[in-house]
Image (tube, rainbow, N blue to C red; front, side):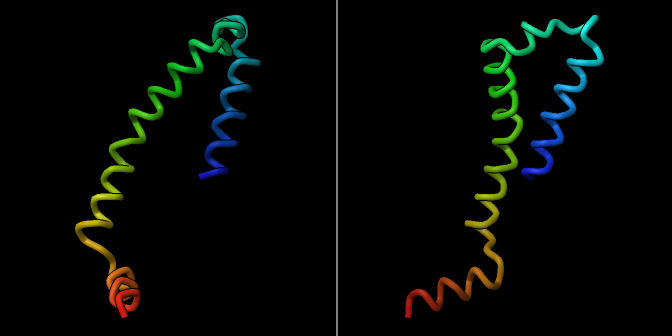
Length: 73
């Protein structure tokens, strides 16, 4: 995940550099734009996070079931 994040930031900065005649550099790095990107990212990420948590809670893996049994002893 960290590699994906770094690669995304690099691609974002490269696109700002190579497309500077099309993209407004100062608008792209403004607090308003960064806040909007964070909101969109959070909204996109949340369903996958919720699915993983619900799946782990409702249908735990075998080793997770064993960990629960061992921790009760």
